[in-house]
Image (cartoon, rainbow, N blue to C red; front, side):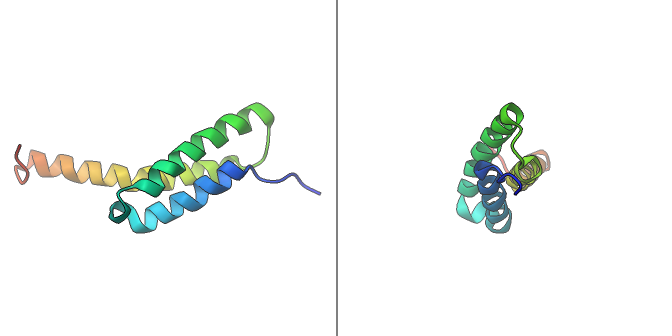
Amino acid sequence: MHPQTNSNAKAAYYLGLIGLIVGWCSLFIPNLIAIGFGHSALRTIRRTGEPGYSEARKGLTMAYLPMALVALGLTLAVINGEITF
């Protein structure tokens, strides 16, 4: 019998996937929650050696990616003068 995957890692993975699919339409709420679960899972996995490292990393990647793309898009829009303050 192999050990169970860290539950926070599973939550980060599935919430990251949801955040990747719905992106900014959900105001990044699933992404933010996935980031919390992902970092919590990595901290626990590092301390206890539980399985689930790859799920936590994938969840974090899927959670950060849409946020980074929106930030990049806004930055480029400001640089090009399409958005003014």
